[in-house]
Image 1 (cartoon, helix red, strand yellow):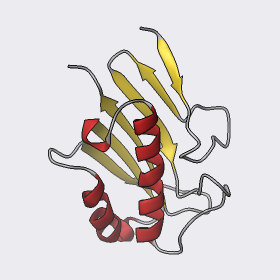
Image 2 (cartoon, one colour):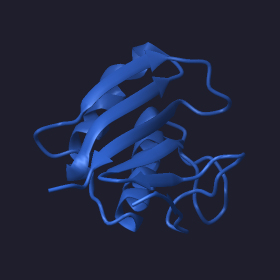
Image 3 (cartoon, rainbow, N blue to C red):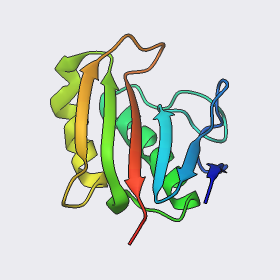
Length: 126
């Protein structure tokens, strides 16, 4: 199987030259998602909790469009605008991924108008 684009209206449309997701063999790669409402294209939430929830809903929608789920995630990369937000973001993150949790890297980054961005890799093989 070659590479296949994953696209869904359940997540924010790409804001640039990238795909929402790609399936390549047994893996699904979800591009960095932010707290963008898929219907309006606007940033959702004034708190890190609200923004993390919307971001993970976007991730979830892309995974589901690829025939995967949050349980299939094996790797997450998280960018926070301020690492002091970690504990509050982590409380929401924990609710979205069942055990075993995916491996994760969390870094502080300069983000444009948002507090969180998350990308994931999921394994959908046997």
